[in-house]
Length: 584
Image 1 (cartoon, rainbow, N blue to C red):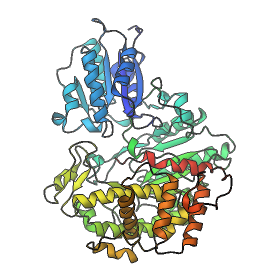
Image 2 (image 1 turned 90 degrees about the horizontal axis):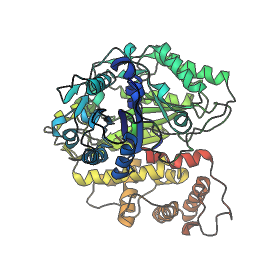
Image 3 (image 1 turned 135 degrees about the horizontal axis):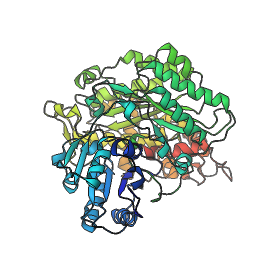
Image 4 (image 1 turned 60 degrees about the horizontal axis):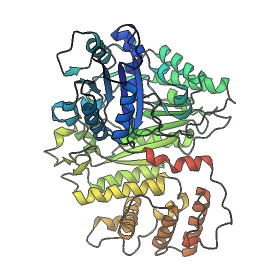
């Protein structure tokens, strides 16, 4: 088969941000020849966009990529569809079909793998592959191009042994390595059954042959890759594999301690010429934490792993303790400390072991700990969530990411809707609107709390001031006298911060686009109701200077140096972290 001027197959998706490099579509590309026949890969290309691009712009670029229609050379466009891009993707496909009705549109991804008969996007498509697409997409492309034509619109994805899959890492371009987080995996699936997660549908976890994975990682590193985000749902499930992977990276640092990093924070603008498309974890994806930096001690390496919170045996501890600062970020999904809620959602978690492991990591490792909690789970009240938040805050992880429950299509959490009064939004991302335990107003209130927590706590801009906020009485206007739970502010950091959140909302009516100067002045007014104005001002002054901000808040008039010092790289990086945290 000879290659035409224009590709016969185009794989595309709308990523959450440019920094994300789509892993799933690279798997499809890498497996076209193996499972669709020799020469198929040469007919294919990747187009990567972001959800911030307008649908007409995306369609215009796709049409230019595809070239003119041909009666003799059918063309296929495959889209990766996810909870964060389904709305935009639907509009792109609608416009594309109007312009080129001859195109064969194929969909795949978690958003279209379940409830396919209920979605506008699937009605627009010619074919939908549900579940695994590595093998099925290649076979479908061969049939669409050469016949016989497939009869089924909905095609259940074929799950092969992992040994039969070609690894996708050769599909990462040099630009990807220089400017993006690289998504990699050593396993697929999850043996746990947490019902809010699509991984609850997996029968188990499957591991790739580790020598293949390590060889691929070595090739990526030799090409210049320095940031690796493992998308394994349970990195520390099989300790033998975890230890070998960590040892690989320790050996890399030992062998090349002074090799410079290509910083992933120097991001290029969105580029329609960049190869890519699809990453199921994008909205949860984390870039560099405050601990990440480019120095000779860590050879510029940054590693992200998602770990089970209550499983940290001694072999793994010994390995984690060897990494220097700035290398490891561990995402720890605690989600809830409420035992009854854990049982309802089929989540197995030893809370005491979880707490002990987090404390050990903080005391004996340099890992940056990013810990997740979910609000709105069946049976969770605001007070029980507050208890869990306070418990986690006392442990002291570097970041506490607060999310609101979302009903992913196909996730078993839907079985609790009637019994627990769960009502979800009908549009993506399908966030819970109210439950039998939490009304709609409280969920809106918590949503504001989570946003202010990102801005004031997770941003790292208000370290000293936050300590005051979590121990100070609320301003007089902050507490609703009818809110009996809010009276608990005196003993609870959660309620203290909720009082601040309510006050900020009442005062400014916004949770976004709040400048550092506005926040400084607002926090000064709030805290000076109950604390010494001089003490509050000194904390704000220290935080403001350390953040690198260079304006002149009213509360700090006459106190700032003429030229504030340039912000440390880690502070600049951390200030943008929360833009990445759109919870999935």
